[in-house]
Image (cartoon, rainbow over all chains, first blue to last red; front, side):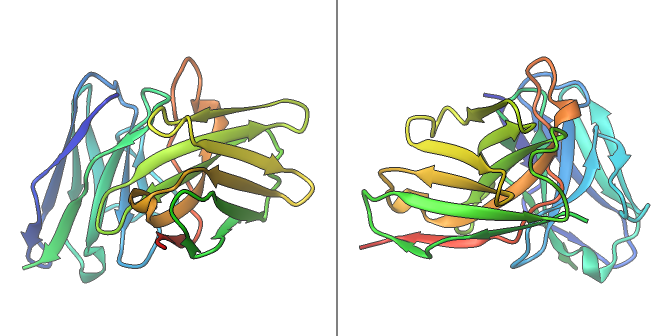
Length: 107
Length: 129
């Protein structure tokens, strides 16, 4: 099983500032990584797939970088509606696994 | 626009079988273009992929998370355009929110998985006597 580890723990960022979330894979997963946003009481929403490709309708303040084992999700200018838990997910292997999530808070 | 809606009994007794259904609208579950999945989230915890089903109307296949394989079954009813989940011998650790979600079949080559989009509205399951 490929283990996905996200950091930091809760992340506090001021409105308008940049938020940087990290995800590490226990082995190389090439670019087979997706990011999701989950707001309270809602299902996760796909933000990024292929490590860098924004899903349809996702604002361009969201961007993904990385490959192999190290990945980053960046929100360039934090908006209040971005407060959520963010999950990374690998699909390099058919046994799909998720990171434990990073909670993003307003500072 | 495809929509998914999970449903089922909110309360299941320990050792019994959990049965959930996910209704798909806005697209055919048998198009052959997608895998249909169940994913769960224990209260206050992260996400766990349960398994997937594929059908193109003629052939189909399933694949399950090894951690649940001995207890789980996923199937499709093409006439109703829905998919179902059965989880046997449930315990309190099976309590949580259950989602159905779609994944693109074109990505799942050579042993790969896929991303999930969209996700359905969840259903909460509590295992308790």
